[in-house]
Image (cartoon, rainbow, N blue to C red; front, side, top):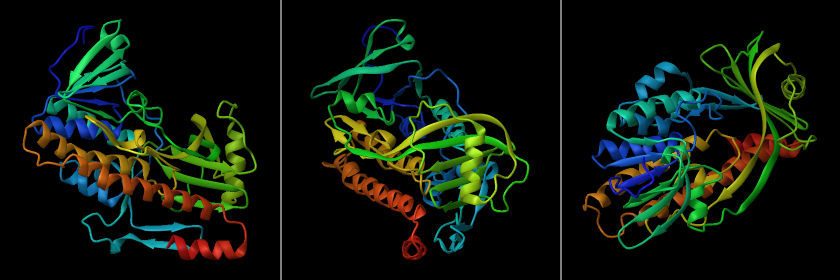
Length: 368
């Protein structure tokens, strides 16, 4: 990309996570010229948070010829047990995929990135949005970073989609607020080896002030997510493996001999949603539009389904085949879904941390 204005991209997608990759790949497969702008350097990180692909997402990926490859990489789980007493039988789902698939986000990204490349998506890495302006015919993006040739640049498009996450530059550029609040502070994440892996593929439980989740990677490591409600420290506070072990022991009764941590981090979880998913020719999708707690593993799945809803509508609009109002249906359909996911994931967190006997009884009934 040069520092001069270009007009060869009909749609610009900002953010090369799962949402952006699926959206860009869909558009390119439909014959729409696409540039995908990403502030990171090329390469898929293995330090992802999402670990679960839901049945409806697998159906969407199956329609694109991708589900079987992902099924071969992941572990299907049809019988899910939570909090000791709650059992969910996913074989009752009316779907070809009567399970959830335990699979790290980076495996999903690899497949989606390859598809996008093969479909002809143009990638602009190490580039971020500095601002944008709209007119009746399109959007001009102001860009900065090494991907622009070392200086500021512009990119012209008929439409822009911000799939650039919690701190979305696209959302800021169109002046949309992101109201909400932090619901969980000082969650801990760790990728570790276990001397004694749990009996279940996914292990989830809470006890007192502690909550823990454990799921396997395909390479012998396990992802551990833990939370100690009584310990509220900044994300920048150093994290030691002993702290992770302590939270897991409190929540699950033992630490499974965890060792050899290859990565550890703290983060906080917000509940936020943009009041609109569309401003003129600019759209928001995925975490740029909505963020919530990791409970239920709904984040990546909701973003991928945003992308699947929007991509074909944008393709028709660009090709002049969209009836009046078609693009408005994206927000009309997906904003209520985002609101429901915020409520359900937040409710699961509150149920998980229930202390009193009557609230624990309610947890079993309501979660089912």
